[in-house]
Amino acid sequence: MKPDLSTRYLGFRLRNPFVVSASPLGRDLDRLLLLEAAGAAAVVLPSLFEEQIEHDSMLVHTTMEHGTESFPEALSYLPEMSSYNTGPERYLSLITRARESLRVPVIASLNGASPGGWTSYARRMQDAGASALELNVYFVAADMDETSEQVERRYLDIVAEVRRTITIPLAVKIGPFFSSTANMARRIVDAGADGLVVFNRFYQPDIDLENLVVVPDLKLSTAVELRLPLRWIAILHSRVKASLAATTGVHDHFGAIKLLLVGADVTMTASALLIHGPGWIESAIAGLGEWMVEHEYTSVEQLKGSMSWRGAPNPAAFERANYMETLASYEVPR
Image 1 (cartoon, one colour):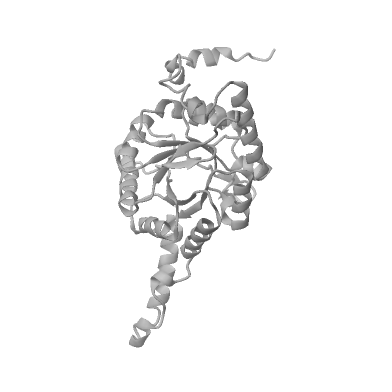
Image 2 (cartoon, rainbow, N blue to C red):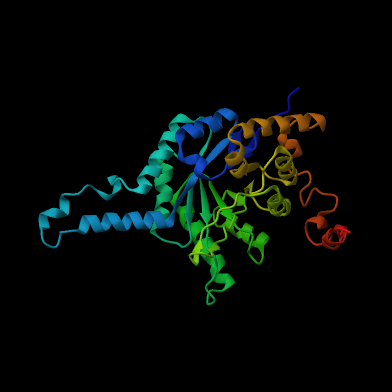
């Protein structure tokens, strides 16, 4: 008998735990359809950024104000802001078209760094048809006058502001750099998050030595990066009242299985899909099913969390207990 691969995430019953994470893959509706056909259980669209919203809003404001001080009748010659064809408007159109075309949940993504008017787009995403919203709070805490308490408060204020704006499920994508990640995870859930996406990748700039300028340098994830979400999902499973999504480092079905064992509800992938194409999902689903049969699991729900912090025989292994063992286990080449 085939095992039941379905799982619950953000209140949705998904056909399997493989979700397409926010990336350039989601910009094109035809590619989204290919990913769904390959077996993707849900898709997260690329992020709409706070800067895009504010920049486009400023352009619209400037255009609407141009000439009005000289020609009073010009106050009404341009269309309403809500119907103006800005970049964010194209994003909202993508949500609508994806929701109309796909049968799996379409999760919009909103990326910001500070509370403000841009969060009103969360409601517009909901109105455009988004099944849920993934909020990506992304900023580098480089201000020496900003305390850790103020940094955390900024996160919580953004989450609370977006939560007030929408009624659809809200997932929050977080980074691992809090001084107390477990405590902060709980506070984000208390602020209104229905799910946590663990973890955000903070991309690092590089230096162009010929032109002496700082340049972006995107590197795709590797399987080694799985270890960080593995540990923290194990610690958070059943200790926060929220869905848990694991992202970063999921490059094969073995990695996905490990994350499910420690308590992930879904695993999210972009790098593996960018490298291998939609067919990666089909092979990952097949691999998961075969492993479950071999190890006599009848459902994803049965294996989920069985090796979490609470379920593992030695929960301290996820904290400090294996620190010395790990260092001692490395053999120096002779």
